[in-house]
Length: 161
Image (cartoon, rainbow, N blue to C red):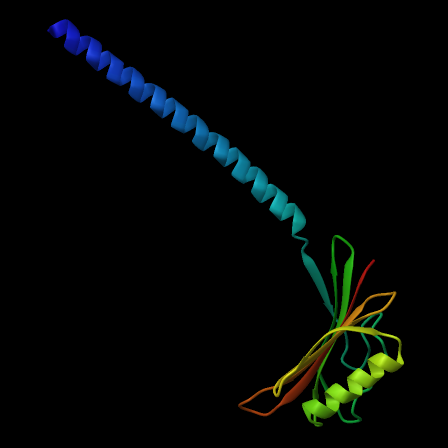
């Protein structure tokens, strides 16, 4: 009877050891693949480098013929680049005209300047025009703060360098 208990105990210990070894091996293998996934993901993420531009100047490559009101106020003005060659020039400014007027103005501008309008949003407090041409993309967002009624326009020109 003692022999049976010893053999049974050894068998259980061997099974526990094999199970521990198997699960430990799977876990370390999955850690390696998770690490590889994290490395691949981090390689895809390019840090964005932003350079502020004086508010009295245009960002690089920004379409300077975009219509604006005579008394608009620039809030943000910058260029952004990534290590993988993407470029963005953005200008954000306050406007006095209604969003409907601004939307019509920018829509006319895009059509008259050979931009292909690919996507639009036209709601009461937010409007957007996204257009492309041979050189890049232009996204014009018009927004109205519901509480303050402040209206802003954000124009971003992007291209792959």
